[in-house]
Length: 125
Image 1 (tube, helix red, strand yellow):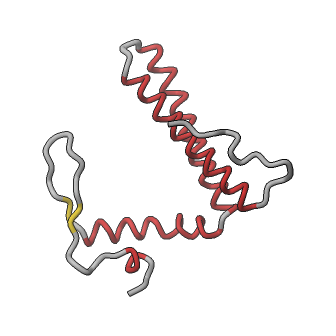
Image 2 (tube, helix red, strand yellow; image 1 turned 60 degrees about the horizontal axis):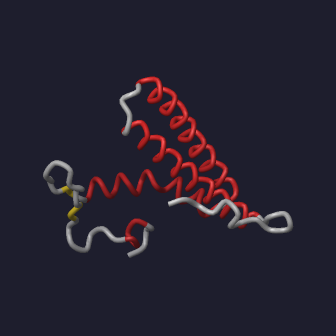
């Protein structure tokens, strides 16, 4: 999957919300690139290529972090979500249990019925 680099082009300056949308596409593109470079690393035994690709992959990860910080500056709602995310994750991990899985399977979380909801994570009943 690749993103369309021209999806947000407009014949004028972008509004803050349009720029935030463009930055989200930039983040998606950087994630795509990171995954592509990792796939190349996984697909070769050439240590020289692995070293160069790993360096480039890590630069993409830096770009992702920078874009996320820029997005937080442009979108106050996103900034709030970034601030509350660590607490949400801590709550999810403390209230749920992760079922053991066989090798290669994705773990599934189980939750006490009625205790954890999207609303409860947002501080709503």
